[in-house]
Length: 63
Image 1 (spheres, one colour):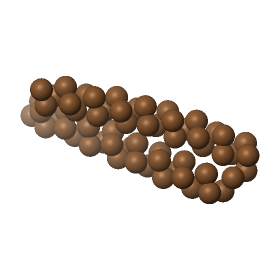
Image 2 (cartoon, one colour; image 1 turned 30 degrees about the vertical axis):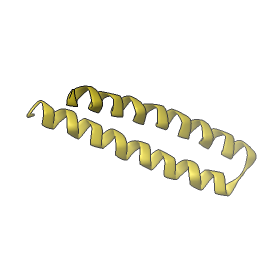
Image 3 (cartoon, one colour; image 1 turned 180 degrees about the horizontal axis):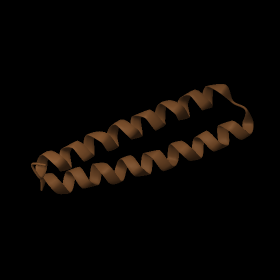
Image 4 (tube, helix red, strand yellow; image 1 turned 120 degrees about the vertical axis):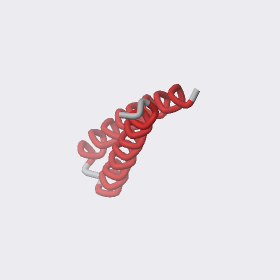
């Protein structure tokens, strides 16, 4: 059960990264600096979430 939750967290982080990159592309096109900052922060959150999920998978497998 724990492993399934960790995999879902990894999938969620990938979805968040996709959304953040889409927002980044849109903000760059509109030259909206505030949206650029928001997109950059969202990318960092997605990376952190993915790193936590990977760490959880490694701990679950005792690697």
